[in-house]
Image (tube, rainbow, N blue to C red):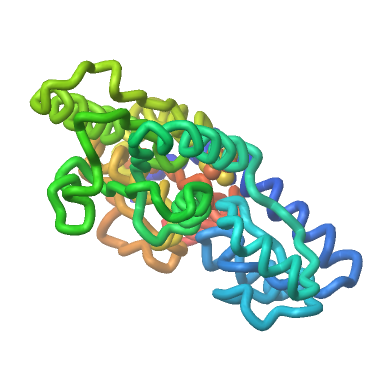
Length: 297
Ligand code: SF4
């Protein structure tokens, strides 16, 4: 077979918030202290396995962790988690990403003001996602989570937004900027249809630049290669968005969790192979994927 070329995307790999959380976790584990992570520290099975081998235990709930040291991951948590920890002798290692912390604070302040005037805080994001739970928690559960423009008409959302009053729109940090603009456009049209002024809607720019800056870059990267292998955990929210960008730019894009997922027929003679990943994909996994391919071709 003709030699194939492999390029690893230099801008793929963990984002700042994930690097910071993992470094904080490793510092605690290396000191010999036991550490429990509230939810997966990163949506990447291989990295979790690596940290588990160092002693990190992952649990789904803060309940019953009295006396333990608990890590809050980059996604953040709602205020109730901190209150529970405080009243149950739980030591918290808070790894909430500073970008998410700032967003939580903005939503809290906005809700305090807008709710007095009968307005609504709307958050674009995935229902049940940890970051969304933390954001909604800043409003005492009153923010309306919208997953897509079509969701505005769902039984869950419909009737909860008054288009004749103020609406403050925020986005989960890892969402697709284009989808966010589309949602803002649909809400704006509904305000207009209700006879309101466009000034009733405030669209806050809250998509993380570590995610949005990868969009154009990945589009270019995917179109420059014959085949793209996108490495990401199935649970990763931004992994789904970024993979969608690759697939649009290059139909021969494949999402894999580990090198063994690669199907031999995907790669042809002389192919230029591009390897990239989500903000929750470690660089070492991209390198392992390249090594795996080299061992076969
Ligand atoms: S994507 Fe952005 S907001 Fe989310 S953890 Fe990474 S740096 Fe923080």
